[in-house]
View (cartoon, rainbow, N blue to C red):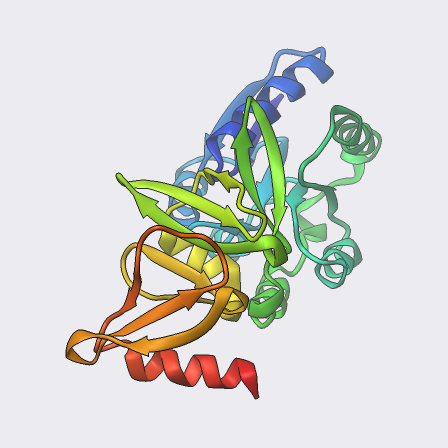
Length: 256
């Protein structure tokens, strides 16, 4: 049995592989891919596997882009944090899903469903991924409800509403909550900017700040802007001169 895992979170992918191997008796070849680009390249040169586990939101786009570019006949179980509307769209196309963070029981249930139905899967039943891609691409503001972080060998979902900012320190990505807790997401700021949506603004290379964390803004040297935050933070968060007009429009839009 050949299984492909498409997941850009290394810890999640490894955990998924470990649990799959514990739940499936037969020997399995498991291939792990981490991006849309890597997925397209793989399916271009390889036959469809028996089963695919795939995250929806990858660092370089939606996984549906892979299957639009390189159609596959294999059934897919999506591992996702998407909202109910997106999940209903997936269910309507005959695809199963498990919600992150998943448990072994959830994974086992999905695998048992696959085992029961695998005899009827055919190429003629492949879902309309282009339709799903258009649907989900239009839901930018509802991409995700939480960000997965790693803490003491556990994977924890942190709700976006609880996050004050993301920032870089010594090239390590930090997540700071309004309650003062710090976590370390396994994504860079570019990826988090896409995930976080319009409630967050990329002040500069180091800082991605939530609108709710901003009390007011002060003028700074050379027409830059300094953000006054409602959370304790030792560093000044500065918006560059070039980004200042865009930032003020973003801030006004949120207030209105």
